Length: 589
Image 1 (tube, helix red, strand yellow):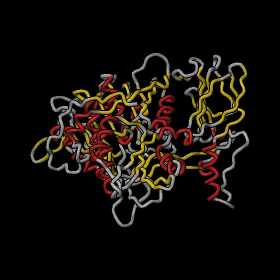
Image 2 (cartoon, helix red, strand yellow):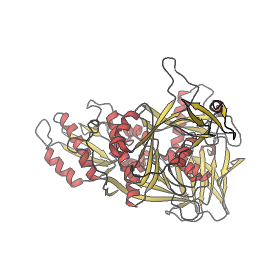
Image 3 (cartoon, one colour):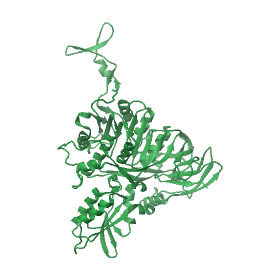
Image 4 (tube, one colour):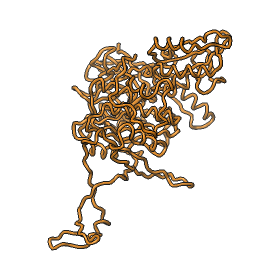
């Protein structure tokens, strides 16, 4: 699936002595990594939203691979805002609301499940290496006058500041912005942590774009100008110097902006959503209309939405399917035109990497995750009386999407630590450098305790996708241009509900589903333009909110969904998304 590596233009390390944590494997130092470049994969256009040509992009894929695509296409961005994982040690989950069709429910009455979207759990060195690669890639696609805003907090921000000094240069540091917010929760054993930091750098100190925002002078400040000139101008004396009053003053680097209210119409329910006012300030300060604003950790889509509102072109990316769907729906409602692209990196085959990792232990034949080989190994496979340690890529870490000589070197060293093992199983999503890897097997000359060569067995995880993904079942009737959903079955959701009910056995909160199962549907779309296998064109769509109200073709309503979707033309294909984010496409017969 890998096409090639896109070379970096940025110079390798400047030689900062404060970067000992930038460790790649001993055989491949950072300079080698730099010379290798960014991995580029096939990119597929999966949907066009709106009419006519658009440069706006929603990219389902990792920041590193998205930047490789942009660089190959010679696309430059004028402003970058990113809100990457904070290395907080937390798991982030999407709330899944199960509504009752035809009835409005208060939030407290909604039946709720959760689905893990991603785990923000890192070893510090792994996180910093991961961030270094992505910041370096982002710099590659920034225009000469571009700025970058990196949003973090106390967990890892001070370390990333050092990375950014290395990549962008200390001379190109502009601000450490403090975003202060309030919330009802406060600890008793320390001061409340009610701020995060946004590090601002520019691509080049020669020139950059910046518009300084002004704010009204407070009434308290105005009162200090207690003197008046003959022509009526207010002023005050400061150490013998006249200071005339201005109605507006520049804002500084401490921003008091409230969190997005959960009841706000802007709130998407996305766990790490940032307020629109925060992005509006950043975008207005560091870009002009028609410039390109990018966010490579798109999340709830706030950057793209605000950029669109302000007349900018947006490019946003995320690895999570739930994030892509949240962004897509939000941008549709904002009446944006855009293209949805998917980076075919192999991991795209696994809809939810976080949950896939939990399932792998049960579907790989002969695998047990209870073993004695250490944390590096995912499990051990027992086959024909022999036991072999098994390495599985962490699907949450996109750097492990490719089994290459760098990664294999680390695996071989770990095999050596096992002390004469006879067989090892290595699973992969995609593999390159096959000739080099075969040569490495010979060079390492790994042998078991009897002196025989260690057997290295490679397995392709993509062959397991049929076991991991159970397509939803949709039954429907067609009446002219109207499609009526008569029954919907999602085995994955029913399993999740059964697990939930098992924990709540004997209690009133048990979740019940109707025979038709329509309450498990979140979104429907009809393609009346393109036939099977082509880019999706949504000619008519319905989004059903958690209370059952419909958003029909970008317009909010106070109508409950009645199981139907209607188009102006003959429908050719139907797309149905369940409340967990799984989408099923059927060709209408």
